Length: 455
Image 1 (cartoon, one colour):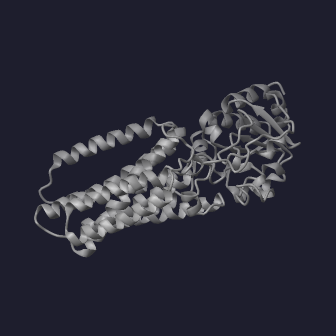
Image 2 (image 1 turned 180 degrees about the vertical axis):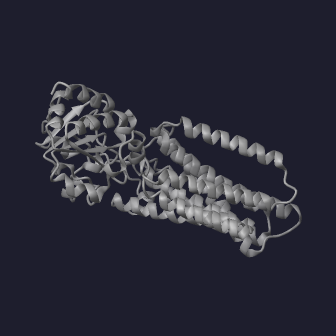
């Protein structure tokens, strides 16, 4: 019965993961996976003898209370930091399982078999790297650490030596049956996690978060092998595989390899002088934008991180409703790496009750831009930069972009002409068909809404 219930939990994990692939079913998928985890937890507790219920109940209350409070209070702009923190907590939980097994085994005079020692070392190393690396990512995302890469002299060599030391000390710990040596593995892995993520810039944090999510799953699977829990093994393997696939897909969306993300220090220094073009820009007023939108037949909204910062999603939805009442067709084009984590823009727009069938991915939206009257870009920069398509000297050349410049009119809502994360100018801003509305995203959209009433 235990194994059958674990199998049922695994099925719920798989169904939940499958349903997370669509915004329409994501909430139900999350609930299914949560029920699966609750089932696995209950079955595990039911199979334990001499349980100290006090610490378990205290852990459930404290952990559940903190998790619920964070999830309810966190702003959508801070969701990437919360995900990074959850990854870190998942990694340290797996490492603590391995440490508890070490203390239990050696405390009673036992020793590990080679196989058990290997998975214990893997759980410790991967879990510790995930923990420290995730909280460096957390710091970069919330601004407590510099978002730009911090390049240490000989950093890659130091990281390679640390990785070699972790492998060597792990082998020593297994051969010597030494609990203390396993703690050295933890210390080295924590240091490696910090030094590996520090040189990665804020533009690459979505990929890093996804990769660390995969690491947390692998660490959980290793912890499952340590304690012989099949539900933990299956759940960890699913998270590890899904996170790795997502990481590779995001790298493809940025035209970057994972090695390039992890080791290049992209953004540490500009690829060239960061200067703006001498061409004049076409400054627009809210009235200009209102006229262009009101007399359009179809509009595609392109959200970026600036929309998230301005919390403009509800204002954008209000604008779309007004346009739809005037007979305008409104869609939304979502770039895979827009925002600070996968699906960031989808979640923001879903929060504002934007219909799911209006959310178009890269392949769906690009064929439409050539027949679009107005492309309304709010807070996006690099993901709409035509240099990625036209300029083979650009550092982002080859990166798939949303081809908004093919629309009849492009309206860009932005605070200034400052470059995006890639640190390069965007020729879209100086195009003949582009109007620039310089303002905070939410304030700009609200002013356009007011102006439409007079059109």
